[in-house]
Amino acid sequence: MITGGLDKTLSVGTDVAAWFLFHPHDLAHRRADPLNWWSYDFAIFKEFAAGTLVAVCTGGDGNSKVRFTNVGLTEREVTYAVSSADFRLQVKHQSLYLDGGYVLPAEECDEIEQCDPEGYGWIELPNGNYRVTVHAIAWYDEPGALDENNYSTESALAAYVVHFQSVADLDSITPPTTLPDLSPVCSTSEDVVFSEGEELSIEHTPLEWSEYPVLQWHEVIFPYIQHRLDLTGLVEPFGLSDKQMVMVLSLDVPTIGTLVKYRYGGTTYSEGHHESAMGVVAIRLVELKRVFKRNEIFWAEVEPYNPTFVPADLESIDELKRLFADYAAIKLTNSIHVEYPHFYAEHIASLTKARELGWRVAHALDLISDRQQELLALSERDLIHRLICHLSQTE
Image (cartoon, rainbow, N blue to C red; front, side, top):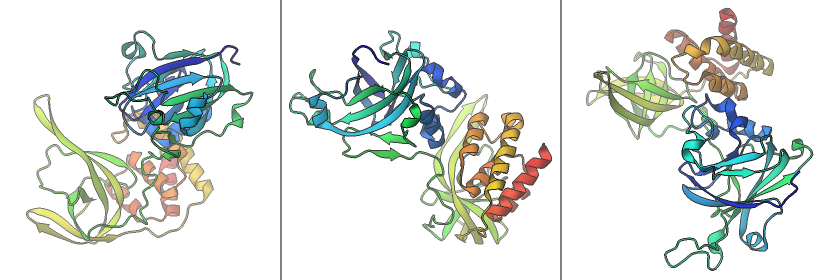
């Protein structure tokens, strides 16, 4: 329980349009995760539910003033408050750190000592359970908040007020399910959905064109997943139509391929040779009806392809998750497809869509390309059962 008054204001800078309040020890289990683990809904919700993290989207990069209090908003702040969100927080170390995304525990994060040698980002708080309410304040709307050069004045309100209230039970607080958008310029609070694949649907994503450039690849590219493709030594020319193309295992038609969207690409020079790579996100399945060359580049006429819909039962879904968790604990460490095995397994465990679950599991497994291709045409039920059989045989 807070016994004394708390009134401290800190400035936090960010280039990820978010700030975070936590103690590093409570998020030590994230030290092997990717730098942007917090942008995945399944991961950040787990921390919100456990009371180990308070985080909000600011709507943009830059510096924000944040005021911490245990007595609530002032009259001025109430006047200009525009949105708020409640969080669970369990304080175990009598202190918390305010960060703009630079030292949040992850594989490549900075150390707090490097970013903040004077400990400026720390606030002291007694151990205990808290309801933390973060208020976004439209501080710039108050007369006198900006000077003649449009900079904030010394008397300007903070952009955020963080209110701590002691509670007996964290379960009495409903945490956000994803990162809440508490931009001071917004009049309403909305959740920011980052989760990869969450909004994609192979059944409903329309095709913008009937023809796309084609790249024959040595393995199947499964939808819902971001892929990094090593293009070093690739001699066949290829192009992009509106930054999209179709990737196939074989150019023989008819065949099922994957429509992908270009995310990044480039060439680097390392150890005496050039290395080329391209990042793509797989959007949906298509069926190739005709393959032809245009300006020395393979193109294909395609139609949407949707596997037969036969739903998988919940028992089978749970069984696949269990088998994959066992597989991941032993064999996923050396996978060429999965960069962060523990994080990937955590993602798999959180999935609720049967087809996404199946394809993400298949992506991580050491399957020959022909077996991968067979999986694309299966119903949800058959896909899950096929993967259960494969994992059962590898135990």
